[in-house]
Length: 473
Image 1 (cartoon, rainbow, N blue to C red):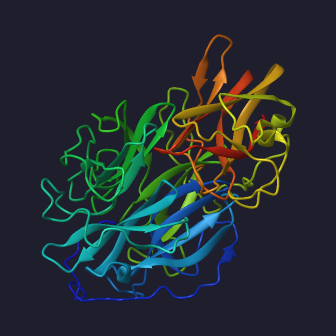
Image 2 (tube, rainbow, N blue to C red; image 1 turned 30 degrees about the vertical axis):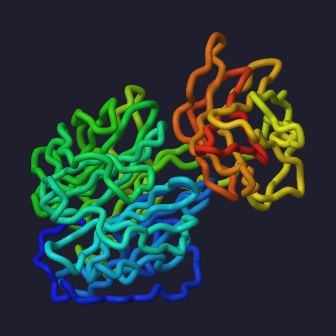
């Protein structure tokens, strides 16, 4: 969200908007992905077989030269081409301490909950704050998780404008918050509760020409930061517009190395984007002014394919009016786990290891209508391994977690490894810890005779699996 405007008359006014009942309806494949309303500042999140996009809603009237934003929407897809608008799942009224400006936001999962970090105008001193709402599913319902701002003008070393939060959780469980505008990028660690800072606010180094709108992700062990810049040195033709530059780092707090422009100037003056891997492909979601009647304050979310070079650098995204081709969700045919031999570090005597690859389709994480695998009372990290008599080419796995609410819970984290012939190597990406769904991990094709699922339990708990699938390339 570019912030070059004075406060509107809504500043400090108490707005309490209840999210209305909305019938989720799909939209046909095209860019922008939704044209029934105007949406902006998209942030993607992949959970199981679904990609969600969290976006603000532009409500400015035609010709109005100011942002009017009072709610946050959730859009979703199972094929990256056909999208469903689930309606407003949070709004200014979600935060009693706020009064206006539902600007850029992002959702981050943790411990079976979903934390929605928002840019919102508080009623107190200063201008924009960062709030946090929480829900039990990607669609909520969401409620205020803190009762006040996480970041405000009173936060030591805060940005010149505290907007555009992006939260990234690393493989070790440490979460990081980046945010900022007016050339003021800021970063801090988050405590495990996800609503408190864990240490000082720092100014990250190496984000050349940073203006606002950071978004952080990780690929093949390398950290990526995309962000809006408005320089005319290969970025935009006028500093009234913005492009998306990106930088990489070997540590989540940097220092960062600038790599170039990944998304050029769009048709709106603002430029805000996010990146996600979904069903084996990488995508960039962003906004422009291309919808009928659109403009700088009536923007719409678009999505296009993102390509990487062999050295890990990103190719510049080609902006299209058609959007990406359909990439159907759900596990593909050819679950080769059915023919694998399963072994494990431990299985409870009253459970069975054969549950993990017996071809069942659970109805929920508490489903006991079929066999289940659990490792209670063991804690820490346990593993399940598949072995095939000869090498298999594999590019995807999907795991459905078991949660009996009696000592077995969703894991804190997990990772998938493959056998190189002499040692285990990590596969890139997170295998996901969401309940009530297959958590799908896609990765570059590997040829291997063994695949291992490492499951790390939450403190004092154990873990379980209802089904673990593996798919041939």
